[in-house]
Length: 332
Length: 162
Image (tube, rainbow over all chains, first blue to last red):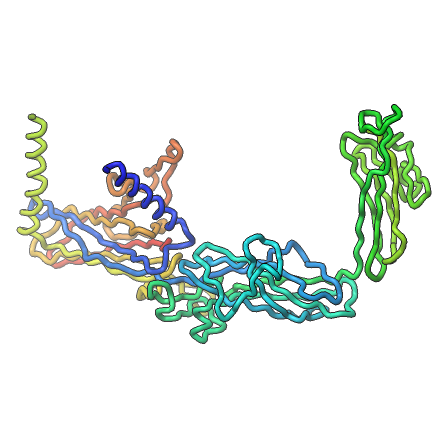
């Protein structure tokens, strides 16, 4: 029985420790302070205490919203439901829900038609059939230190040209402040009794600056490269990939969309187990023409140190026939 | 058996003695005031620290405690030592403790021992490391002069809400 109590209190102690490690002291927690004094009068030592003063920690509403896309997001023109990914984190000390808004930012080439916002179901993959529509009239409550991922979708207009860009700013607003009619609160603004445990809700600096911008860039042209093994000859009459066997590869470069793709360079760093047959004395076939592997005399070359095959294909107009590069390697 | 007897005797002295002296001679009163410590920006671009009413305290805010000590008796009080544990959910703000005519010491072991900051150490992963302000559990002011009858003084320090 004693043992059980000890374990229970240990468990409670560790729970408490976990709570205090959160973003901040929870809303409604009381901070108490009592001072004491000892002194001597006529040789006797006396002690006394002050009254205990207590202050209640109020709810600090704080949030960050951060774009999760690495760099610009490529889109086609037109495109329906192009998505941007944002993470919303409650950095305050109470439970709070946030209204997510999106707006077109000026100073770019085009504006998008802002569409639906979705709440990610937890897998981090956008699927409008699975992820629920984010309901700004009843947004999800987020616990302190917890995050949600939202997908902000937009429709991209047609007739845009390559590299046109559009900035979309996404912002989070505290529901407590919105419900109070404060739609653009500054840091330090208060909703009396609006916080957890009937504390006041105080707007934090991060919340007052909770927005982030992501950029769509029209990519009217797409370049893809595919690699395949064309043949294996083990030099023994078979096709086993053993040391000394010759392995033929093909690289196929395809340009789709509209316009010209400029300065296309195909490169293929071979693994350590492979080398180009005959090294820099070998050949690389580009669209049916054998080119020397030596660098500088044509658009194909081989670097024996890095075992990298490089072919400069120059400008290719979208819709042109595929460029096919073939070469033979030897297993080391 | 002798040990137990000694222990009981000791315990009796410890519990009985202070009770007598307090009722007979209590005369120094202690009052703790609390404030919100804010940085106020001035028009000329500088800022100053102000202690204001403690409204809307949230994590990260600084709370200032002022402990007022007053001798309401008719005899001087000597060897005055003021103690204040750093409240839970707060950390002591380095260098914030003040007090005229006092030496200020701190504890990192819940008030068992006290020393000046450079002599405080904590154990971390079996290593003895210099303690920092966030490790302080108690603040102690040892007054270097007596408080005469009717005299008043104060000490103060600041904590930050975790």
